[in-house]
Image (cartoon, rainbow, N blue to C red; front, side):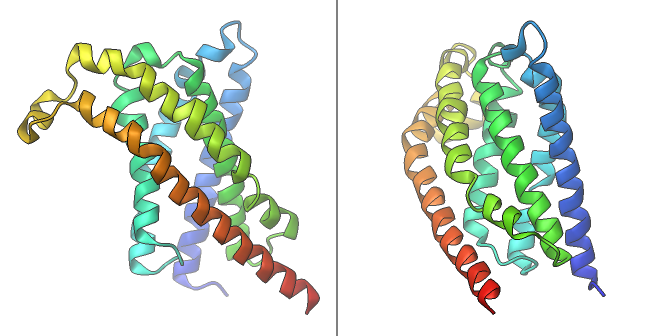
Length: 218
């Protein structure tokens, strides 16, 4: 019988899987429209914003030990995505129709459908080996696509609007900088932070797949 913590994780991961599956279906359906590359945010933006906000719970899961994940790396990933989504894309309507949004949302949705289905089935101890392999392999392609032509390129395209409107000036003026400068600095740091996360995922991949291989031999 599952413990209360396991039931909670099963419910959380199942609901996230369901939510990201709906988002992915919405994105795929939007591709049939005449302006297919421009409708990803209008079609799936609301549900993705909600799912991303709720995923803050994963940093709490790491802190209290519900899952064997590092708090700092979890927070970095959540913070990067949330800043991109809620501070830039949702606030600047001109960038919402750019192809970079479609690229980002498609990469996120695919990776999260795989990740959360793996987590949910692993909680029940019925996760098939092919899904485990897919979980720790798909990121090799999806992660760079989501970050490069997706997140970073859109942030760069948003810079003129950020500068023109002096976004979040009330907050950033307290620190003697502008939000524009903050985003430029974030773009400079992004590749280094991304590489740290990317290499961590490769390390995690080797560990998980080796464990799976040892279990097969037993």
